[in-house]
Figure: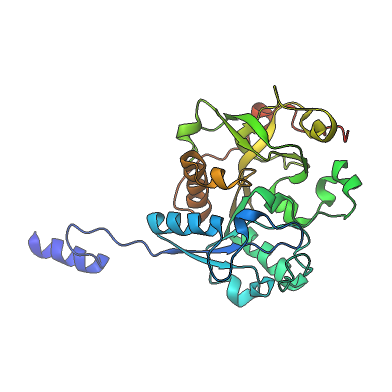
Length: 297
């Protein structure tokens, strides 16, 4: 019996009583700002940005290997193959140099990246990742539904940012407390944030958190909240790839909030394939009036 056990241990590559060490997952944190550059991703010299510091700490705790860049030139088939997941905190048309003047993605690089997600790579997006690759430049078109004619990046992501109003406190309700990291949000929570309003949601979204609009400012520039509750944090499958997005992440204090970190870590672990979750589409049940586009004014 001891000989058989020893043989099994040797075949498995483990020593008796030990668990196989998990190979660190490689995540590319991409923060190119072809549009507005948020304070949480601004670097001062060679020091990590606020968001990068938080992610490096979470990476250490979770066994991830985090690489950060603002250089769109990294998106080549050879480089894409090196990573297990891609975390975007971006703005604007990333195939243009834009605001931060960092090298843009090539059109071929964008296509290769999207194909890699479809083939099984993970994707994580925070906040302004939904303010990226708008199909048209004029803000007037932000209130127009494009449906399946939207940019392929936004179709992958699952929704498009319209506009935000004043930073204010608002309640999130949890539609999927069983999702990794969301247990602490099961009863809902209220925090102050720069809340995004969205349109062109994919019908296969698994809503994790819904944006409650009751009690929010709804006139003038805040008219974007003059709508029923809508998806704010979600997961979806894009081909074989796992896509996780949360609208939160504008404010520095949100990044240090333990609940946000828990939800974000859970989403990253799921996108990497390390955590299991039922992501059956629930958008119709969780947010039945999600197709409503708010008035512009």
